[in-house]
Length: 234
Ligand SMILES: C[S@@+](CC[C@H](N)C(=O)[O-])C[C@H]1O[C@@H](n2cnc3c(N)ncnc32)[C@H](O)[C@@H]1O
Image 1: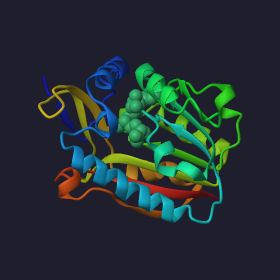
Image 2: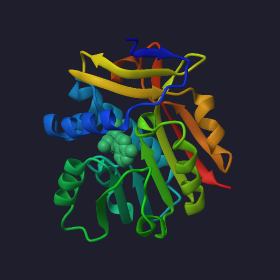
Image 3: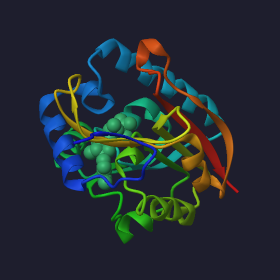
Image 4: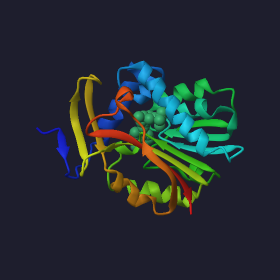
């Protein structure tokens, strides 16, 4: 069976994705559990780089009211620290939500909920946010769900959005479907869409900054990389 699919649009099995993250949450800790890969130094460097890019772009905002979609262990609470007025993180991996709620139990303004990004509740969607973050999540979302997520972000109308995603550097997308990953010691499924495939959803935002995130040292590859977009709602 082909597990590395070029160009064609193939749906991922969402149970595979859920199972992968449930196992990952139990088998790795710290940044390594959410930023994948083997090399702890590379993950820390990648986090530092991403953090300084976002901090610079947000320097005009005094305080942040954040919705973090697919938040993992709440990396962005640590990264944006004192600037946070309120933070709401959602993730469908119960163990991450448990760890994150435990870690920030003393911060009443920081809350994590177990929830799929494809099924965000009214309670979450009715709050007021000036920044929506979604980093490293959309690669696990099928094509039929993707426009709905962007539509919900548009309706929230935050001042800023920060999206960071693994992408294909080729002319077409690459899909890994139950790919036997030696590095991750697990079967792995993900859709590496092209930059253009993502940018069709950004028409409601002015993109104020976008670039590739990774060099060879911190996980850049020949066929894939991660791209970030910082947008402002029009
Ligand atoms: C690569 S990690 C990134 C975590 C976090 N955004 C960060 O940057 O540190 C991907 C995260 O997406 C979550 N995820 C994947 N599919 C999801 C879905 N349908 N609903 C909610 N969370 C999902 C996983 O549980 C995992 O925490």
